[in-house]
Length: 307
Length: 175
Image 1 (tube, one colour):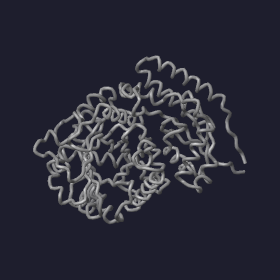
Image 2 (cartoon, each protein chain N blue to C red):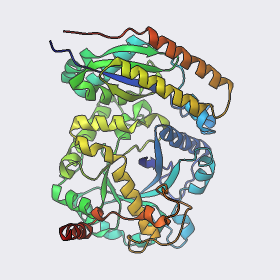
Image 3 (cartoon, one colour):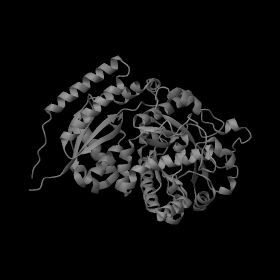
Image 4 (cartoon, each protein chain N blue to C red):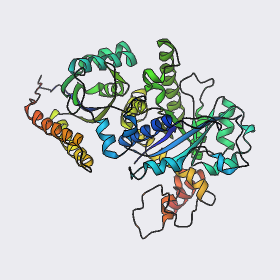
């Protein structure tokens, strides 16, 4: 199973609705990714931190019409699983007080910090699954192993979005001449290199960010590309499988569980992991791995020393 | 004597639906229609020569003179079929990562928008052929869920591919 955690929703404000053509392109992108093997895909809604979120009316908080997409696509593509994701572009985390009210409406919660302070505060204080950076422009700060490493220990993953580098002529249409395009690609490689160094190849999620079908790529090929940059060979595969899956699970545990560890009931409606043994309850599918948190690792160690 | 080591990359070309075209609505109708659109036959403008040119250009663009010299010059296309849009590239063993990386960064050849996907990497061309035939069979099984005229054309071309493979001579580069 492969996961793609970033398929952008065509609108970036609450006031606009996507046109029929935009929806068609989105559906085509999803189907193209599905044909490339991505069965779990998250539709990404990206906003600035200043945007007022309609907290008063819970129905409007999530603008992604996931029910429509599911009804259109899932009957035809039975293995496809769709999720919703919110990305908030953050420069001052203290403004993000209402996060608790929003987070139950999205399956995955991500932030895109624009400065070092925001990155630090987001990873320590906020309950998020994913951190993404704008890889097309030069990061205004240095990624420290200490910050990134402690975030990864908490279970937060870092995202590499490859649409910046495979956009093609259409994707770069509003960028300008070829020197700008080259600059974007150079920045991408530099930022990915920084991220790989700071994270020691751990906790990286590779996702597409494809706004049109042309930008979809085979995951293995992108991993090979990143391997030429120095991504660890043995940890590469988990960038599109295990790490992405863990980000999804931790996001869904937030909604459906008690304190992100235990889940009760037999909710077969939206199962993330295929049930292997039908006699066992569904809770297994949502079980958090011990190695995902620092206390869990201590427990694991203690257990091992007892044996 | 030591044999000169190579890697053979099996790739296929996918044609994603373009944003403006009228066909794009049909694309997501069913799994087989999506697969049939992606696995179209390639136009005649895509051939051995233009493919090698596009690959070398992509390597030059993304890996510079160093990449073009070490990886680009050793690239050659051993097999390419327009009917199935499948092909085999031969390249140096130490640089095949670079070649795959450059392949994934190509987005158009001769004005055709496409995705190049690397399916399999092997040390011998024979294993690449076997894998390709096996994969085509799986694909046929997937597509044959519903019968259309397009499907029959595609199945015919796949049979042709199997025949063509038998005529590709095994590669015996010995030093």
